[in-house]
Length: 333
Ligand code: BT5
Figure 1 (cartoon, rainbow, N blue to C red):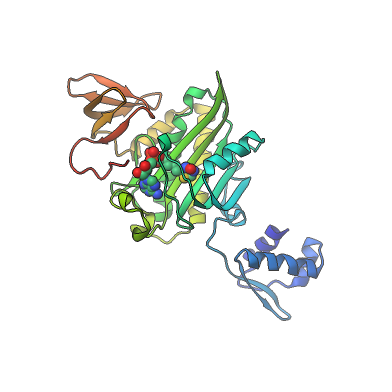
Figure 2 (tube, rainbow, N blue to C red):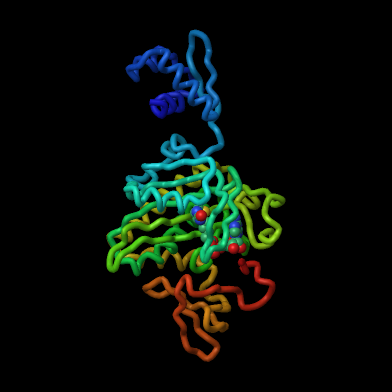
């Protein structure tokens, strides 16, 4: 009901809508309307009440409220169920719990702040209040568990396309799970899976996007390697708009994958890759070597041609990839 009132006010703004009309359309009393208006105001919506004219929506809160996300989404199933929290430890962890208790395919968990945001290999992810998009998506795909790491590449392509479109900046993908802007880390992606032999129970794809983290708020050890969109954005945009576009692209690519496999995603990935053609240093648990990143293969693995001409297949999760020389802005740990 609250969402319906909001949608009517949104559609009519800046014209007022009378309490009587709202009550009539929604089949509730005027007091009922007034109560919903009060609860919207508590959520941060600015609604003016003019005697004899009615209510006017004059401002929306800068929050990732489900009502706002729903209003910009074009998806069929992704983000149609939303778990929104002001503060969580980690949206991936919340969503894993929800998955176990039967949450729907496509559920989105989004928070204003994470107190224990996670990267790979128990690293942390800095996620301050209201300054980014910290969210996770629950998926129950029909493909085999060995395909799951490719979802990280899909997420990267969706994020890059949305950021480029909404913010007018040249975000690039660094294999396997980062999006960079001007050589610094803008986005991190963490895909987790629950599976049995030959069957995925669920995937949780967690995405962290630095939208407007002020430089002096960034922890000192990340200041040279991290960046926010607002540091270089060429267009005004809101976090909700950007999130909506990410989900739109994500669903479009995901549906394509379920029909055609990952090949079209790899083609897109190559277009936005900053890794291919570059000298890289591969640091795996048992060896370290230099080489040129030449391509990704059908598993989404990075193919690295070593100095002796042989080509090594590098799987995500096994290694750290760094620029081979220089100070290497894209050296994150
Ligand atoms: C990642 O790991 O890049 C995956 C990050 C995924 C975060 C999302 S947020 C929503 C969801 N919920 C979660 O709990 N996680 C996901 P990795 O490649 O291991 O990189 C982690 C490293 O990035 C850290 O060790 C830092 O060096 C650096 N880092 C941490 N926070 C950062 C930030 N906000 N911006 C840029 N770099 C950061």
